[in-house]
Image (cartoon, rainbow, N blue to C red; front, side):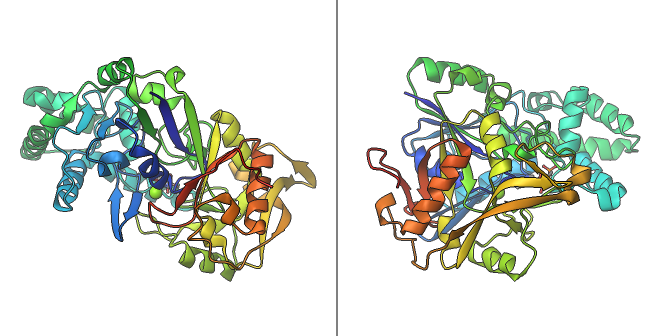
Length: 425
Ligand code: IMP
Ligand code: MG
């Protein structure tokens, strides 16, 4: 029995879903606790690709139950579409999916507001996924939002919806309001069999000795408070969010696995100290297929930033690291590791600069030799070239946390766990 969290520790897209999928075989429950359909989680197995947005990645294993906690936003139409697409691919969700009745709703109005806000911000835009996430979380916090179980009462839904439009100074005719209520009620009737009490289910699962795996979305540096505000998402993306996002206290966690890509990527705007601006970025983007799974946007590429990474390791009290996409670096003559930042001539080792001053912050690099070998077939540390092992040891040293899982390709099979009895060096 164990309670494990797999948490993305940079700006999202660390290939968390792959690590969740790798561990999910032994899990009884896989649980999402924050974010919504802004997430794009990709799994590749036996040549087939699956993309998840709101449904937990554990759904691939027939014996695994998938829970969506109250901290996750539900866009009813998007979730139904995702369920349908998965069923078409032969994945059965019957009796395997439970969404907390307290989950907040993303409504069409929220998507409209998201796009409008981005437009108004102009050059200062966040670069959101335009899935309505910010406005929906704001309404939840402001107590103007609607929650999943509200939809069982048509009259109540109509009243709340009308008040919401009024709150945002948006006009809606009686007919349009009625139409929206009808479509929400219809969606609820289809989703009803999946709606329940995730808090209670987790409590009972833990009491009965189940293995529970928590799946983070986005990344800790997109956390609403501890990320690069305002270039962040609107949910809390850290270890503690497991408790608020499910009702199952983070104190129950036995293990927190921090997922980092062997280099950095970011989609959307915001500070990126180690961003690579020359053609090398395109090479890495192509090799790593670094395009957003939700929006298709090309991801910005950079060297691994140990200043940012050790900050998120500290925030989340990691027990170990999972390093992904190591294979993408194969063939590069040399690798750079950012070991400190420099601002106004001063060396900085803490990640606390103001986003407004990000342009003044430059990376201090340590250079490592690369490796030529194709490592995608390696299934143990010993099989990796010495240069790759040295790079992993450097990550461990800077993050003061041991690497436990290494991923060397997109497929489920291209992952291995490090046997700690053997030395890294
Ligand atoms: P929002 O979450 O759509 O409001 O977007 C806020 C910021 O978080 C933007 O920079 C997005 O690109 C980024 N973001 C949101 N979700 C993800 C994700 O799943 N992966 C990577 N970046 C994300
Ligand atoms: Mg993603």
